[in-house]
Image (tube, helix red, strand yellow):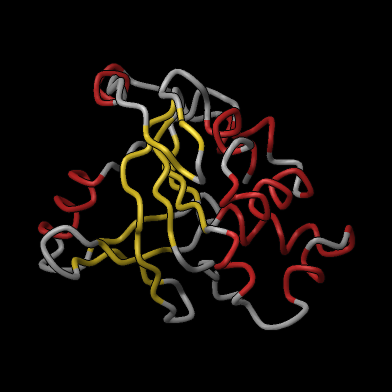
Length: 183
């Protein structure tokens, strides 16, 4: 599964769509489009739990590869709103496989910015499907003119609060809930 992430190649069309130069502020820090996902995420004060989880899952090197990736990045509050003890439990070394599954459920191969997600939803007559790197699906749907929601395998719905944070190897969308696979 992780090898599949690292093996993803960047085609010319994807590189062309990843050329925006706008810097977006996330977690009080500038996210620079010339840096990769990990290089930017470590600076966001809103994503310290996510960064710690990525490190514990040994996914740092993978998320620094060429990609491209679309990452739905839950903020710290999203992790805090999980049932008591969940974060502590999945961060234990003996639960690494579960942690990897949860984190890779937030990653899509390819670049899906707001416009690409909106087009996917339109083509799906109101609901678009995305296959995650973990192997299961997420569903995206519009909730207003400029609000996309993501539904996970357990029926939980997350809102994207910050769209199109371009990276050198993909795009990040900040979300308000942790997405959970069916496992």
